[in-house]
Amino acid sequence: MNNIVKPKISVVMPFYNAANFLDESISSILKQTFKDFELILINDASTDHSDKIVSNYLSDPRIIYVKNETNQGIVKNLNKGINIAKAEIIARMDGDDISLPKRFSKQYEFLKNHPDISVVGSFVKIIDSESKIIDQRTKPTNPAEISKKIISYSPLVHPSTMFRKRDVLEVGLYREEYIYVEDIDLWYRLIFSGKEISNIDDFLLHYRYHQGSTAHNAKANAVRAYKLRRQTIKDFDLKIGLKNYILIYSQFLVGVLFSGRTRQAIEGIYKKLFYHGK
Image (cartoon, rainbow, N blue to C red; front, side, top):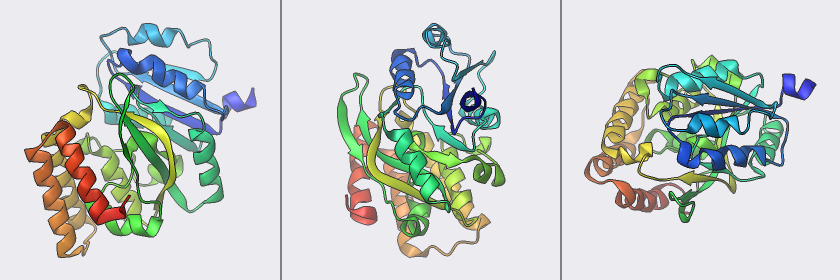
Protein backbone atom coordinates (compact mmCIF):
# COMPACT_ATOMS: atom_id res chain seq x y z
CA MET A 1 0.00 0.00 0.00
CA ASN A 2 2.84 2.43 0.70
CA ASN A 3 3.98 2.22 -2.91
CA ILE A 4 0.50 3.20 -4.07
CA VAL A 5 0.33 6.13 -1.64
CA LYS A 6 3.79 7.43 -2.49
CA PRO A 7 5.07 5.87 -5.71
CA LYS A 8 8.57 6.32 -7.07
CA ILE A 9 7.29 7.68 -10.42
CA SER A 10 4.24 9.73 -11.35
CA VAL A 11 3.26 9.41 -15.00
CA VAL A 12 1.46 12.47 -16.40
CA MET A 13 -0.61 11.67 -19.50
CA PRO A 14 -3.00 14.38 -20.72
CA PHE A 15 -5.06 13.59 -23.82
CA TYR A 16 -7.81 14.94 -26.04
CA ASN A 17 -9.78 12.81 -28.51
CA ALA A 18 -7.12 10.11 -28.50
CA ALA A 19 -9.50 7.14 -28.69
CA ASN A 20 -7.80 5.65 -31.75
CA PHE A 21 -4.53 5.18 -29.89
CA LEU A 22 -5.30 5.54 -26.18
CA ASP A 23 -5.72 1.85 -25.42
CA GLU A 24 -2.28 1.04 -26.81
CA SER A 25 -0.70 3.95 -24.95
CA ILE A 26 -2.18 3.12 -21.55
CA SER A 27 -1.37 -0.56 -22.02
CA SER A 28 2.28 0.29 -22.76
CA ILE A 29 2.53 2.04 -19.38
CA LEU A 30 0.88 -0.74 -17.43
CA LYS A 31 3.23 -3.27 -19.07
CA GLN A 32 6.37 -1.52 -17.82
CA THR A 33 8.87 -3.77 -16.08
CA PHE A 34 9.12 -1.02 -13.43
CA LYS A 35 5.87 -1.30 -11.45
CA ASP A 36 6.13 1.34 -8.71
CA PHE A 37 4.29 4.24 -10.34
CA GLU A 38 1.00 6.09 -10.49
CA LEU A 39 -0.59 6.95 -13.83
CA ILE A 40 -2.37 10.31 -13.92
CA LEU A 41 -4.74 10.35 -16.89
CA ILE A 42 -6.20 13.77 -17.72
CA ASN A 43 -9.08 13.75 -20.19
CA ASP A 44 -9.31 17.28 -21.59
CA ALA A 45 -13.07 17.16 -22.29
CA SER A 46 -12.73 14.67 -25.15
CA THR A 47 -15.75 14.30 -27.44
CA ASP A 48 -14.84 10.81 -28.70
CA HIS A 49 -15.07 7.52 -26.77
CA SER A 50 -11.82 8.01 -24.84
CA ASP A 51 -13.74 7.88 -21.56
CA LYS A 52 -15.00 4.38 -22.36
CA ILE A 53 -11.47 3.19 -23.07
CA VAL A 54 -10.18 4.55 -19.77
CA SER A 55 -13.04 2.88 -17.90
CA ASN A 56 -11.56 -0.51 -18.84
CA TYR A 57 -8.47 0.28 -16.74
CA LEU A 58 -9.89 1.96 -13.66
CA SER A 59 -9.70 -1.22 -11.59
CA ASP A 60 -5.92 -0.71 -11.48
CA PRO A 61 -5.27 1.19 -8.22
CA ARG A 62 -2.28 2.97 -9.74
CA ILE A 63 -4.53 5.00 -12.04
CA ILE A 64 -5.77 8.48 -11.17
CA TYR A 65 -8.38 9.69 -13.63
CA VAL A 66 -9.23 13.38 -14.07
CA LYS A 67 -11.97 14.50 -16.48
CA ASN A 68 -12.16 18.19 -17.37
CA GLU A 69 -15.62 19.62 -17.96
CA THR A 70 -14.20 22.06 -20.52
CA ASN A 71 -11.15 21.91 -22.75
CA GLN A 72 -8.21 23.55 -20.97
CA GLY A 73 -5.27 22.90 -23.28
CA ILE A 74 -2.05 20.97 -22.92
CA VAL A 75 -0.15 23.43 -20.70
CA LYS A 76 -2.80 23.68 -17.97
CA ASN A 77 -3.18 19.91 -18.00
CA LEU A 78 0.55 19.28 -17.70
CA ASN A 79 0.80 21.65 -14.75
CA LYS A 80 -2.29 20.10 -13.19
CA GLY A 81 -0.73 16.65 -13.48
CA ILE A 82 2.55 17.79 -11.96
CA ASN A 83 0.74 19.37 -9.01
CA ILE A 84 -1.31 16.19 -8.46
CA ALA A 85 1.78 13.95 -8.68
CA LYS A 86 2.86 12.32 -5.44
CA ALA A 87 6.29 11.24 -6.67
CA GLU A 88 9.42 13.35 -6.97
CA ILE A 89 10.17 11.79 -10.35
CA ILE A 90 7.69 12.50 -13.16
CA ALA A 91 7.45 10.71 -16.50
CA ARG A 92 5.78 12.40 -19.44
CA MET A 93 3.55 10.48 -21.79
CA ASP A 94 1.07 11.33 -24.54
CA GLY A 95 -2.13 9.49 -25.31
CA ASP A 96 -1.02 8.41 -28.78
CA ASP A 97 2.55 7.22 -28.14
CA ILE A 98 3.95 3.90 -26.92
CA SER A 99 6.48 3.47 -24.11
CA LEU A 100 8.66 0.40 -24.52
CA PRO A 101 8.67 -2.01 -21.55
CA LYS A 102 12.01 -1.03 -20.00
CA ARG A 103 11.63 2.74 -20.42
CA PHE A 104 10.82 3.54 -16.79
CA SER A 105 13.38 1.18 -15.28
CA LYS A 106 16.19 2.61 -17.42
CA GLN A 107 15.28 6.27 -16.93
CA TYR A 108 14.63 5.96 -13.20
CA GLU A 109 17.95 4.18 -12.68
CA PHE A 110 19.69 6.87 -14.73
CA LEU A 111 18.28 9.71 -12.60
CA LYS A 112 19.12 7.77 -9.44
CA ASN A 113 22.74 7.43 -10.57
CA HIS A 114 23.02 11.00 -11.90
CA PRO A 115 21.65 13.33 -9.19
CA ASP A 116 22.81 16.44 -11.08
CA ILE A 117 20.58 15.67 -14.09
CA SER A 118 17.14 17.34 -14.00
CA VAL A 119 15.65 15.80 -17.15
CA VAL A 120 16.44 12.67 -19.12
CA GLY A 121 14.94 11.71 -22.47
CA SER A 122 15.66 8.93 -24.92
CA PHE A 123 16.00 8.07 -28.58
CA VAL A 124 12.65 7.43 -30.29
CA LYS A 125 11.24 5.46 -33.19
CA ILE A 126 8.64 7.36 -35.18
CA ILE A 127 5.48 5.41 -35.98
CA ASP A 128 2.45 6.11 -38.16
CA SER A 129 -1.25 5.73 -37.38
CA GLU A 130 -0.94 1.96 -37.91
CA SER A 131 1.99 1.69 -35.44
CA LYS A 132 4.42 1.01 -38.28
CA ILE A 133 7.94 2.36 -37.73
CA ILE A 134 8.66 4.99 -40.40
CA ASP A 135 11.70 6.81 -39.02
CA GLN A 136 13.79 7.35 -35.92
CA ARG A 137 15.41 10.16 -33.97
CA THR A 138 18.57 10.03 -31.90
CA LYS A 139 19.55 12.83 -29.56
CA PRO A 140 22.76 14.07 -27.92
CA THR A 141 23.51 12.53 -24.52
CA ASN A 142 26.29 14.76 -23.18
CA PRO A 143 24.90 17.51 -20.91
CA ALA A 144 27.64 19.97 -21.89
CA GLU A 145 26.93 19.45 -25.60
CA ILE A 146 23.21 19.87 -25.00
CA SER A 147 23.73 23.11 -23.06
CA LYS A 148 25.92 24.49 -25.82
CA LYS A 149 23.53 23.71 -28.66
CA ILE A 150 20.12 23.93 -27.03
CA ILE A 151 19.26 27.45 -28.19
CA SER A 152 19.18 26.31 -31.83
CA TYR A 153 18.23 22.66 -31.38
CA SER A 154 15.62 20.98 -29.19
CA PRO A 155 17.56 18.14 -27.51
CA LEU A 156 14.61 16.18 -26.15
CA VAL A 157 11.51 14.43 -27.45
CA HIS A 158 8.97 15.71 -24.94
CA PRO A 159 6.89 12.54 -24.29
CA SER A 160 10.09 10.52 -23.83
CA THR A 161 11.19 12.59 -20.84
CA MET A 162 11.44 11.88 -17.13
CA PHE A 163 12.26 14.75 -14.79
CA ARG A 164 12.61 15.90 -11.20
CA LYS A 165 9.46 17.62 -9.99
CA ARG A 166 11.29 20.01 -7.67
CA ASP A 167 13.44 21.42 -10.49
CA VAL A 168 10.44 22.06 -12.74
CA LEU A 169 8.56 23.72 -9.89
CA GLU A 170 11.61 25.84 -9.17
CA VAL A 171 11.62 27.41 -12.66
CA GLY A 172 7.87 27.94 -12.74
CA LEU A 173 6.34 24.88 -14.48
CA TYR A 174 5.15 25.08 -18.10
CA ARG A 175 4.07 28.50 -19.38
CA GLU A 176 0.81 28.88 -21.28
CA GLU A 177 2.06 31.74 -23.44
CA TYR A 178 4.38 29.25 -25.15
CA ILE A 179 1.79 26.58 -25.88
CA TYR A 180 3.00 23.97 -28.43
CA VAL A 181 6.60 24.93 -27.68
CA GLU A 182 6.04 24.76 -23.92
CA ASP A 183 8.56 21.95 -23.60
CA ILE A 184 11.35 23.89 -25.34
CA ASP A 185 10.62 26.90 -23.13
CA LEU A 186 10.91 24.68 -20.05
CA TRP A 187 14.22 23.18 -21.19
CA TYR A 188 15.60 26.69 -21.80
CA ARG A 189 14.67 27.89 -18.33
CA LEU A 190 16.17 24.79 -16.73
CA ILE A 191 19.44 24.91 -18.70
CA PHE A 192 19.97 28.66 -18.35
CA SER A 193 19.23 28.43 -14.64
CA GLY A 194 22.12 26.00 -14.24
CA LYS A 195 20.36 22.63 -14.52
CA GLU A 196 21.54 19.75 -16.69
CA ILE A 197 19.71 17.64 -19.28
CA SER A 198 20.65 14.32 -20.86
CA ASN A 199 19.34 11.45 -22.98
CA ILE A 200 19.72 7.70 -22.72
CA ASP A 201 21.22 6.27 -25.89
CA ASP A 202 18.45 3.73 -26.34
CA PHE A 203 15.11 3.70 -28.14
CA LEU A 204 12.57 3.75 -25.31
CA LEU A 205 9.54 5.36 -26.96
CA HIS A 206 7.55 5.03 -30.14
CA TYR A 207 6.51 8.57 -31.08
CA ARG A 208 3.36 8.60 -33.19
CA TYR A 209 3.15 10.91 -36.19
CA HIS A 210 -0.37 11.15 -37.61
CA GLN A 211 -2.81 13.68 -39.01
CA GLY A 212 -3.89 14.84 -35.58
CA SER A 213 -0.34 15.41 -34.31
CA THR A 214 0.69 18.89 -33.27
CA ALA A 215 3.70 18.32 -35.53
CA HIS A 216 1.37 18.84 -38.49
CA ASN A 217 0.90 22.46 -37.45
CA ALA A 218 4.45 23.15 -38.58
CA LYS A 219 4.09 26.78 -39.69
CA ALA A 220 2.51 28.04 -36.48
CA ASN A 221 4.95 26.04 -34.35
CA ALA A 222 7.92 27.37 -36.32
CA VAL A 223 6.79 30.93 -35.63
CA ARG A 224 6.29 30.18 -31.93
CA ALA A 225 9.72 28.53 -31.64
CA TYR A 226 11.43 31.41 -33.42
CA LYS A 227 9.83 34.00 -31.12
CA LEU A 228 10.68 31.91 -28.06
CA ARG A 229 14.32 31.62 -29.05
CA ARG A 230 14.65 35.33 -29.67
CA GLN A 231 12.99 36.10 -26.34
CA THR A 232 15.20 33.59 -24.48
CA ILE A 233 18.35 35.14 -25.97
CA LYS A 234 17.15 38.51 -24.70
CA ASP A 235 15.98 37.33 -21.26
CA PHE A 236 19.21 35.49 -20.43
CA ASP A 237 21.49 37.90 -22.32
CA LEU A 238 22.95 35.02 -24.34
CA LYS A 239 25.94 35.42 -26.65
CA ILE A 240 25.23 32.72 -29.21
CA GLY A 241 27.31 33.60 -32.26
CA LEU A 242 26.52 33.93 -35.96
CA LYS A 243 26.26 30.18 -36.63
CA ASN A 244 23.46 29.74 -34.11
CA TYR A 245 21.58 32.73 -35.48
CA ILE A 246 21.78 31.20 -38.96
CA LEU A 247 20.57 27.83 -37.67
CA ILE A 248 17.68 29.42 -35.79
CA TYR A 249 16.54 31.33 -38.85
CA SER A 250 17.02 28.29 -41.12
CA GLN A 251 14.77 26.20 -38.89
CA PHE A 252 12.19 28.96 -38.95
CA LEU A 253 12.21 28.97 -42.76
CA VAL A 254 11.98 25.18 -43.01
CA GLY A 255 9.01 25.16 -40.66
CA VAL A 256 7.21 27.91 -42.56
CA LEU A 257 7.91 26.63 -46.09
CA PHE A 258 7.51 22.88 -45.63
CA SER A 259 5.18 20.53 -43.77
CA GLY A 260 4.65 16.87 -42.96
CA ARG A 261 7.24 14.27 -43.85
CA THR A 262 9.15 16.70 -46.11
CA ARG A 263 9.83 19.01 -43.19
CA GLN A 264 10.82 16.08 -40.97
CA ALA A 265 13.22 14.76 -43.61
CA ILE A 266 14.92 18.16 -44.03
CA GLU A 267 15.17 18.65 -40.28
CA GLY A 268 16.66 15.16 -39.92
CA ILE A 269 19.38 15.99 -42.45
CA TYR A 270 20.54 19.24 -40.92
CA LYS A 271 20.37 17.88 -37.39
CA LYS A 272 22.70 15.07 -38.42
CA LEU A 273 25.02 17.53 -40.15
CA PHE A 274 25.17 20.19 -37.44
CA TYR A 275 24.45 18.51 -34.14
CA HIS A 276 25.39 14.93 -33.45
CA GLY A 277 25.93 13.05 -36.68
CA LYS A 278 23.72 10.04 -35.93
